[in-house]
Amino acid sequence: MGAAGSSMLAHFVLPVSRHPAQLKPVLLGAAAVGLAMVVLGTVVWRRTGSRRQRRLQQVGTVAQLWIYPVKSCKGVAVSEAECTALGLRSGNLRDRFWLVIKEDGHMITARQEPRLVLVSITYEDDRLTFEAPGMDQLVLQSKLPSSNRIHNCRIFGLDSKGRDCGDEAAQWFTDFLKTESFRLVQFEKNMKGRVSEDLFPTVVQNYQVAYPDCSPILILSEASLTDLNTRLEKKVKMDQFRPNIVVTGCDAFEEDTWDDILIGNTEMKKVLACPRCILTTVDPDTGVIDRKEPLETLKSYRLCDPSEREIYKSSPLFGIYYSVEKVGSLKVGDPVYRMVQ
Image (cartoon, rainbow, N blue to C red; front, side, top):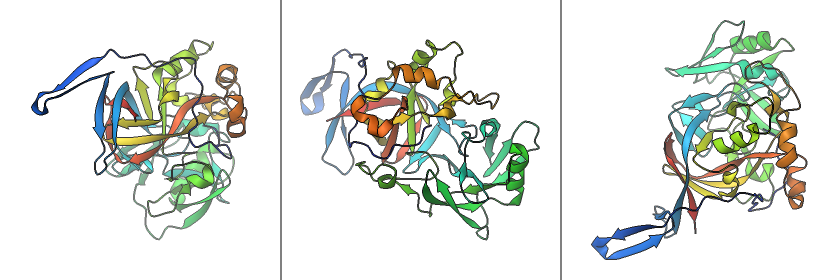
């Protein structure tokens, strides 16, 4: 995923050439109160504790949920998750709560060390088990001793914190990457994350992130990936784009038009489109960085409107970043609703 731009408009909507399919009118009756209404594939959603009512239009279904515990390492597929203000959680397995850093605290991702994508993680009994080609397993407790050092970390030019995961984990990543000395750190929920106003000075939402690039949630549709693959000689996989929520049952790039959405009992608000970088050119099966595809093809048809070039520069857009407006739970198979005023 690409680094964020320096600013953004409050309610950016990417121009698209496709429009959501129109749903057939459905008659919903409420005989008990003598009410009936005709709606265009929608129902009424009343947010708890609020007088605000919105129509819900189903725009898709959750096909996959992914948690990426360590930034740039392989994701863990889950069937259900809690959606917190800091992103998806399954037990103590949190999205991008672990980070590989240099000795000086600067983050390391697959942009600099492509072989990080070969590190797989399993989670059981509050332990994370790391595996990588040619390496013995590394087993790490999800709760670290409070005596472990807290590092000052640097992520895209912003300061953050992380508790050291110990010498064994540091040696494991150092031995695997074989370029210099590294440490593994863990974000803790009492730490202050990077705040949205520093990431995007004009953003309306007020949120924090641990170690994700830009926001707590990234959403991408299966149809958008299918559309991209029709233009590529060598097909790419969904895990090259590292979404948290994969949606099925919508048109390609229809997610560009979803501002406020409801999944399960979780409400989310669009932050901006995801600007893509060379990370997408790392093959998740080999750990080899191509530096060209699919990035070049995306640039041929997924650049921003010229009026938004200050935000996105020359980065192509693929997927949508969301903030979490109301925490809740969600699962594979849940309908994805667009909330309409």
